Length: 239
Image (cartoon, rainbow, N blue to C red; front, side, top):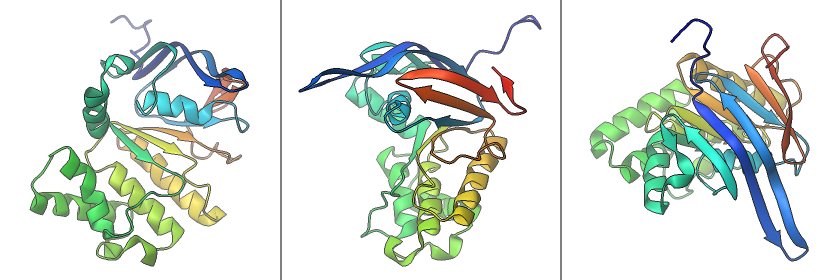
C-alpha cells in the first residue's frame, strides 16, 4: 500500500437505502447513504427523530435488511447472509447495547453477561462465568454480579448491558440511545466507558440525542431525512 492510499474502512456502506411500505405509501428511511468508517473509532450518529439513525445502525448490525445498496463490515458483506448466517455473524462480531438495557429479569447480572457466550458456544460454563466476572469488573460493577437486574440502578444496568455486549469480544459495538434514560453524570460515565473501549481497539457506533459529544466522539455523523448531511472528526475537521 502506498503512503497516499487511505487504509481500508472497517465499515463501508455503498448507496444504502431502506424503504418501508406503509398504508400511507412507501417511506424512505434511508436514501443513498455512502459512508466509510475506520476501525477503532467512537462514532456518534446524530439527527432529529425520524432522520434514520436507528435504521442505519440496525442495518449495519444485521438486525434489519436494506432495500438496496451494500454493507461491508470487516470482510463480511452483511446483506448476503441468510438468517442463520446473520445470527452467527452477529453473535461473534457485534455487541448491541439498547436504551432500555434489555437484561433478562429472572437471570442474575453475571448470567445475563454469560448468555451470548452460551448462545455462540464460545466457552464452557465455568470459563464463561470467569470471563463474565472479568467484564463486570472492567465496567466497574463486579460486586453486583449475583444480583438480579432489578436490584441495580439504571447506570449499573447499562454497564451490565455493555459487559454483555462485550461477552464474545466483538470488534463492533452498536448502541442505540444508551444514555437516554440516565442522569447527566451517569450518562457521562457510560460515554467515557464506551470511549475507553475504542482505545482498547473496539469500534463503537452510537445513536444519540446528546448534544455535547465532542469530548467523547472521534467522529460525528449527522443524518437528516435519511441522508448523511455532515461528518466531522475530532478537532472539527470535516471528513
